[in-house]
Image (cartoon, rainbow, N blue to C red; front, top):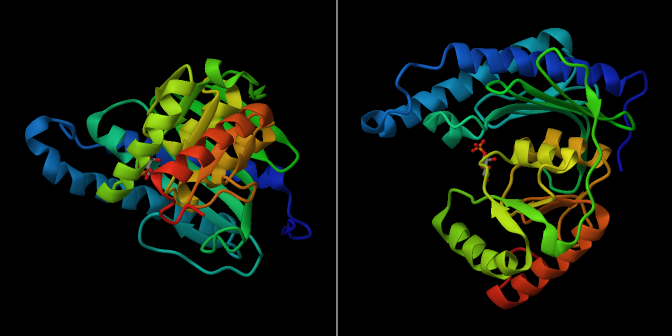
Length: 286
Ligand code: IPD
């Protein structure tokens, strides 16, 4: 695996991630156009959400460019930059865009500093990150070997630990992609998972799902089809809280699968998912 470039302090990167994520969160709240979620405007509102996504990302690009001009930048929206420092910022300017559209308070700005090449699965890893829900004020941060931390409002950050539990007692988060064929596959796999767990939650923000695993307000989370910007910061928040975060076969999480839980539960749900994939058909999960 890649190492942190000499002279780089992951704790300082986490502080920067948190600062800019809070700013972008304020921007998407303060500038959120009135009536965005009103039924008759929803189709055109999708474009407005895209505009807000782009504005949030532009803010992150400008601020990180000012603070860390040698670093690279990659985000969900248009605009990236190659870097020279060995650090690339991977950002999701609004993770949970459908919740943002409908004014459901489960969306976040996700900002991570990663080493390696975030455009190639399995070749990169996060070293610092922050996930901020601007509606609830929840702020999650983590840095390599520094633990994961959560604070709301002015409270002191509290260190997070994952909860181990049995599969039958596990509250399981998952999500669905935007592509219809992928959703059909995800629904088929879900029929194998649902009878085995306490219940399922589909919260609508992968970044927040991973943070919830870290704090134990979800026991396990899995999803197929995620992008680096969806998982980069949450992956580290979960890992630093003691979770295993991987694909189905113990490698780095990637588009084909992200599975996050305390180790025993990770193995138990991993076995169920492997069995489901055997029966449903692999697509390109393997
Ligand atoms: C989406 C959310 C959602 C997940 C989707 C992602 P976006 O990200 O994380 O929870 O199920 O797969 O695409 O589009 O809101 O940034």
